[in-house]
Structure formats: structure tokens, C-alpha cells
Image (tube, rainbow, N blue to C red):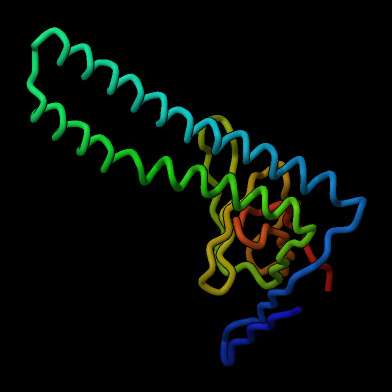
Amino acid sequence: MALCIKNIGRFSVMNKYIEIVEDKDKELVVHRFKNKIRYYKYIGSAFVMGDGVVIVLLAIAYATGKSNAMNIGIFIAVVAALTIPFIMSSFNKVWQLGSDIESNRVQVVAGRIDKMKTEVVRKRKYNIFFLERNEIRIDDDYCEPVSVGDKISISRGISSKVAISAVKITE
């Protein structure tokens, strides 16, 4: 199964295709996805714990008579409306990463780098590549040294779109 996207004019050619993970690369894929699974489980669990603490505090306020049921009900609805999307997106990403591990397939995106940025988030350095209007973010540890105009091949999860590695293609 392969998908090839070609632009006409001043843009370079970008290819997207699905590749079966070989045994030698399987360890890198599983390691990368398990690290991300651990991260997203932590984020989702933190929101669940925060909701639990808020509910316990509201129960104590109701039991001591500091608040009435209507105010507590409205507050719980607001808290749920603000936190449930974060909880669902975090655990959805965990399920997507698990699916990517079980499928033994990755999506490979190959193209020329139009623009490149580097950012540091919580002591981790990330490279952001722009390939024909697509923004791909990858940890610097999993990326070869590249520059603008180089042709690269980026492996990433099919459903999660988490980048696994970026390799410079020699022409």
C-alpha cells in the first residue's frame, strides 16, 4: 500500500508510503512508542487525579454545609467540561500508540525540508521540519543532522503520527 503525493511547479516531490517494520528496527519503534505511551498516561492520569481531588473537596464542602447542591453541581459540570477533553485526548493517544506497536507498520514521509526550527521544551530539544506545508516535530535524539534543502525520510506511526526517526537521504 503506497500513497504518493506530487506537487507541480516550484515545490519538490513528497512521498508517503506504508512500510513493514523489520526486526532490527522493531526495538527502536517499540522503545520510542512506549516512552510516549508512558508520557500520555501520566498526563491523562494527572487530570483524572486532579478531578478526583476537586470532587473530594466538593464533597467535604457539601458535608460541612459550606455549599449547596446546586452550586456544587454547576461547579462539577464546569470542571468536567474543561478537563474531559484533555483526559480523552491523552488516553486516545495511548490507544493510537498501542495500535501502532501492534500493527508492525510505519508511515514513511520523504521530501525536501522547506523550513526548519528548533525548540526546547522541558530540557528536551525538538526539531520541527516543514515539508511542503506539513509540520513534523521530532525529538533531536532520533534525528540525524540535516539542514534546509536536504532530502529526508521520516518514519512515524500510522495512527498516532508520532515521529520515530529522521534520516538524511543522499542523492
